[in-house]
Image 1 (cartoon, rainbow, N blue to C red):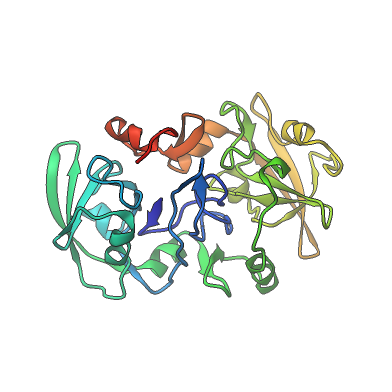
Image 2 (cartoon, rainbow, N blue to C red):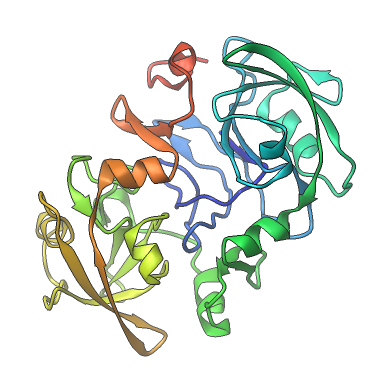
Length: 311
């Protein structure tokens, strides 16, 4: 379960973080399942809510043995200024203690700019801080994002037609029609890849960018939903999933020339591939028991993220 106080991170949902990765760092929160366990909160991002600058992870009814954990602290936000650190446990907000993720949400994202008193436990023990708030829009703009017609976030250079098209995408292909489908990453985290997964569609027959996170392709300007025309001069259409994975990745450092069709306009991007493990680190994730988890989870709480956990 993810609760984004500052929801600017990555990806798309299926068995990983996020739901549809709406472009670049933005994500529309929705319910997803991780090996059958519900872990995410259905929420639309609110441009005008007040936030402290932290991203918190947890799950309903986990109990004190699996507390809420600070995943990300956005730089130059109220939370960062008072010293909150990734991996700190969130014990209470404004006198409310023993919160689960659903109970914490309305205390973290509010319509009131009033500061909150937070109780946490970090590397050096429990502490209490008074945390101010800023509008979520300040953080979004800082990351080059803007709101779309359905309230989701898009890159600031997205056109109206692009936002309308992507906002109407309410489904993704099944897992066997996705390349790099271990929650947007290849099975081998030592592979160099572009930082997105691929959706292979039957109707109409096309291959589109999906599950894009902060990484080399995002920095080059590639967007979620771009239709792939060619990669390094090769037409990918008609190739098997294995062939596509080889075409879009490399065992050694390499560069990619990607041509896409974005609403009828051909765009060409050139960028170096990056090791999957490095892309994951940039997005505050790591591989654990064959799946991706927040990198900030302390060792003492890894049991909360085990596939076999009944919590």
